[in-house]
Amino acid sequence: MAEARKTILLVEDQALIALDTKRRLERRGYSVVLSYSGEDAVKLAASDPSIDLILMDIDLGEGIDGTVAARMILEGRELPVVFLSSHTESDIVELSEKITSYGYVVKDTGITVLEASIRMAFRLFEAYRETRKISLALHEKNQLLENVMKSFPGSVFWKDRNLVYLGCNAAEARAAGLSHPDEIVGKTDFDLGWNEGEPEFFRASDMKVLESGQGLRDIEEVHQDGDGLTTWMETSKAPIFDEKGNISGILGVSVDVTERVLATLALRESEARLSHAEEVAKIGNWKLMLDTGRIEGSKGACAIYGVDRDSMSLEEIQAMVLPEYREAGDRALSDLIAHDAPYDLVARIRRRSDGRIVEIRSIANFDRQANVINGVVMDTSEGSLPGRGDRN
Image (tube, rainbow, N blue to C red; front, top):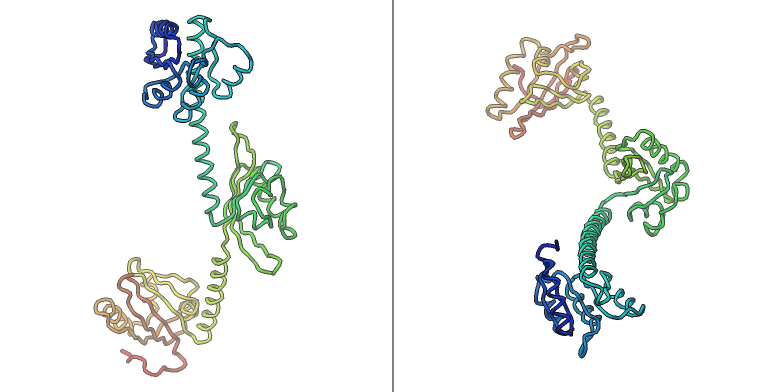
């Protein structure tokens, strides 16, 4: 049986041959549209979307021949074209193949050969369309990947099992001292402009990935350029698998975390200075999280209370306050929470570490939105501060 309801445009200038061929094809289940000239065939192909294939005679008498008509048709739409001709000369056949390669049938070879050629043309055309669809999808994916790598703020690179670079993005090429990503292909870390010891460091983590089959995350890498500028990078690596599930290489992604590292170092330095200042001034800061009832204190605050933990419960802190000061402390805390009343309290506590009784002054405010009380505590045992609140 023929392909269901396939429509063929038969282009043949000889009416008797055209009608006979049309009748034979219709018996095979095809729908056939006749055209007797190249010009008419071009118009029909452009106007009739139901046409699935063209049987094109090369010699069409006056006007354009079949090869010219086929070129014009294929400029407007994709269709399989099978040429019909009584010519067997190689130059004629080669000319038709330069236009399209779906078939060349010598006239009078019989309907069986013609239909076989038509079936083959349909199969080739479907295979072509499927291949093109896959090719377009692959191109779109590659284009997407290329766009992602271009816009990604860090470096992307991939290597084979021998740790030879297969590719990278522009950021990695610049970091390696190259002008274009293509220049990295075929090179190893030893061929690039890394500092002494860096190639070995990079390859050591590469080998861990290859040997374990597991990715590595957040590898900290420190790089110093020729001007002495230090850059911190955070790199993650993962194995690449082939279609059989074997490891074929590694994929790496690096991001510049210099700003974060410098901010962290600055914060640590600031905290160290604050801690030293608190120690000298016998002062500390604390915050009470009302949702959990936990108090977090700075190093200075912990030293004043004689504790070695930076987080304790409110009850534990209240237990250190001498009994005669507890009622006033509880009232001041309640008034702060309920009425935003000023919290400026002087009390005596028994330090947990050595049992020593010390006088403290605690000042706090209430962050109602966060439901947190933030405070400062001072050891005033060796003297009083001007303007402190009355002792209750």
